[in-house]
Amino acid sequence: MKIRFLAISIVLLTVALYAALVHDYETISREQACCAALIVMLGALPSIVSLISRREAALLPLMPLHGLFYAYIFGLPVFSSALDWSRVHSTVITETLYLTIVGIICLLVGYYASRGLYTSSRRPIRFLNNVTLKRRIFVAWILYAMHMLLQLVPSLGSLPSVGQLSTPLGHLSTGMLLMLALENVVSKKHLILLTVAIGFSLVIKLLSGSLAQAVFLLVLLGILYWGKKRSLPLGFIFICCVIAVLLNPMKSKYRDLTFVAVDSVQLSYSYKAKLFYEATYDHYVNNDSDPSEGIDSGVVNRIGHSVTAFADVINMTPEQVPYWLGGSYQTLWTSFIPRFLWPAKPQATIGNEFGHRYKLLAPHDKSTSHNLPWLAEFYANFGTIGVLTGMLAVGVLFRLLVQKLSVPISSSIEYVLGATVTFSLFYAESNFALMVGGVLTSYFALFFLLRLLTFKINLN
Image 1 (cartoon, rainbow, N blue to C red):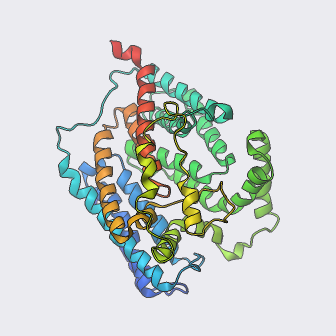
Image 2: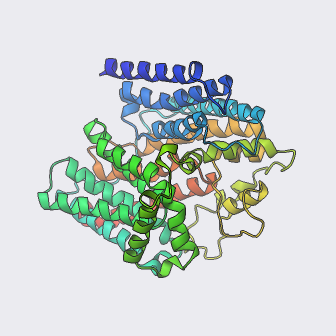
């Protein structure tokens, strides 16, 4: 097994060296290509470590996923000539890539150097015992029904602290159902219902206009499949590629039809499905695109949004925009408080404020939230020292989370819970305070639900 992984690593290294040293590029220099290749290799490193180390393989794959995020979002798009660097000079691109490399190194140092801080006596959190198969099935479908109720009845989602549970409930319930299927302990009827449930969830997420949410669900299910079977979930990977590449070009048109032209809340899902089909048909059948152009430039720039945003921040800070000095983290201390306990809790509008600070949004736009990647946020607040200390601290935080929430996969409910609450942190493209605060509140809310739904079992 280790020889196979070593062979894969050698192949990937060879490809990276070719991309950096042999291939010629129109929009980036050789030095920048080398930096991008190094970002990809550093991002893939946690996955390789997890594959060859039993100790790391036993943990939730938060760091491997987070590393792949940097490889896929900060590294690979740089090689494409379609990536838009028009707002910055070439020297800023180079500085951005170098600082990304240093940041990832600090992240890895924080994660791997801190594992000695958590001894074997500090065991993972366990709270469910002897849950029967019948009760596991019951709990999974009850949670899925709650998720669907929040999806199909928008008024419920608008209640304080309730709407934010919809996505975690969907991930937890479908994850539990998949684990039951992978354990081969349920009937064929259950497998059919599970397939329908996953398919319906994907459709609902796609019709919301957020392709990322559909991909995230598939990634989570893929993680659980890998953890149980130790083989690649090729079907999930294929569907992710279809959604991310083939559906992304017509996303904007669909959003215009549903969000801009009308009030999307009032539209039925059947009508949204009709609009989605029409947008896709127009793009691929009515010659709205030129297949000879290859991958749509919008796809490349959406994938590479974080690295170009990081470059914009470096370019403008502090000469044009003063350091934020922790301003984007003000909601961190209040994000742990559920809104139903504090109805007047300030709304998190950092994404909109960030867009205006760096002139990424029109002055009159008060509703759009511009994604604020963690690297860019660290730099916007404290410059280079913010990137170094911030990434180091993230590494330590990730180690703490996976050590406390990684239970044996045989404890499937708790394993899926840990994967659900930590999973959201891997895609570091939104405000740090909002994402980290959501982990704690989601964990305790789901913890309470699981204890409630398994209460009779735990009495015995």
